[in-house]
Image (tube, rainbow, N blue to C red; front, side, top):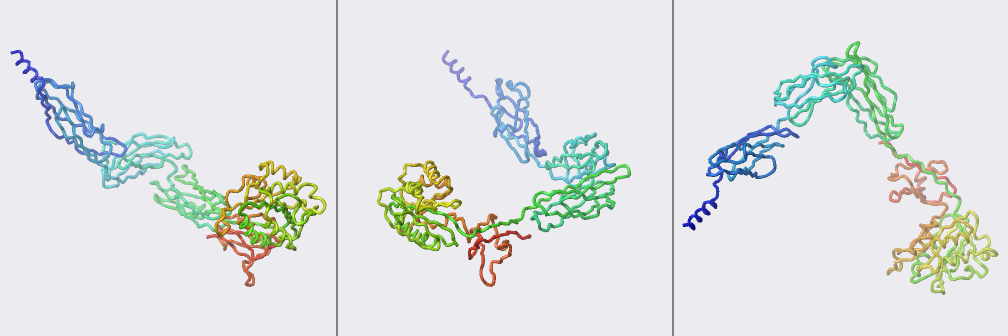
Length: 589
């Protein structure tokens, strides 16, 4: 008997509770007007009943659970057996559009929906009812739909709104709302604006509460180049108030010239206009300035003065003059050392075709060129010393040609050591006296494809050479090595760190054996002149030789030409001893 009762008791306890019942399985909360940036809350309710014989706690679940819907049981959160209570539902809408949720109340499901409606656009304006400075302002709906407004306010520390309009109702087409404002009238009223938010489209309408009855249109100056004619720009003074005004204008001196009805009083009815014209003076580059003051007369005892400001900007125009004074000749001293190395022959063959054959093509009149050996001993060419030659002779080319093809005897001869030996005081006397001349640039030039065997680093080599030269300025140039290919000459590989350091310290350069000597900075007459002004066009260039304008072609013969890719002016002949003046002038549009 006990077993039967126990089974019945367990069965009764495990029987699932019946779902709660609701008065309606759907709850439509209707449509609500939702303004941009604002929220709208709408509420509704359904009745829930507990059909079971026991009291129950009521639990809610919402899908989707986005916190926009909140439900609660009216009163205590439990339902007695057979009891009914209201379920209060609150929905928050933040944007137009239809929203729906599935609300579960203790197993009973209620479908909740709400519709956010976007307000229509509306057309409104503000206008004065009475006098300008202390009067009512009308907010009038001129459109065909209802308008909704926020709380009006005054921008500017001159007063405030005395009687805000009723904003808890729609303003229908053709209806108006009156806003009363008060501002200070001590002298000319400072700028102040009455602003009324328009909730329909999150915009606003505004009206100046001071001397801004005259509205000046903005002057849009175009970008004008310096020294070029500037176009005349028009602008308008417009009466935007509801009362007639008299206006007198006067221009102030500056970078802007004003033309129009100046100094003559003009009566402007509501909506009336005065047209003026402004011209920018382009005599200088940069920002200009200017203003026009106008006096507004409402009546004899009430006037105010305002100004229209101008800020034109004049762009620079290319107008540059370059002067090149060409010396009468190249004048320099040079010491050349060949240290050889593996696979140097193709590079030397290239040098023989370029350096020896045509390196000195300009009118050199004063050249001393010494050829030395990197193996040691005295200067090459004679046992007695160096051979010093002038440009009228080809002996230096012969000496250099012989030395370039003379294989060094040692495994790693040194250009640096050979220069230091050649510059010993004993070697610079006797037949070699006068090799190094005061005030003449000195070039130390090394031809090799291997590392220098000297024990000096860049700093020590520079110091040793400076001591040997008595602080005479010099530049160090190294030729080689190359990445050699089938044709014998290819791209330059990384230069010796020692040579690169010494070239940098002495303002020289590291060159490839396969390069010509064009990168040497010969301090003398040139045919090519690099222009410092970028993006030059040929038609902008005027050339003068010793003050005489010289066209590119004279009597059918070309004198000079412009190379835009190199941005250079190139002469067909050397202009020895002349002053070359190049003017680059961009024409006006």
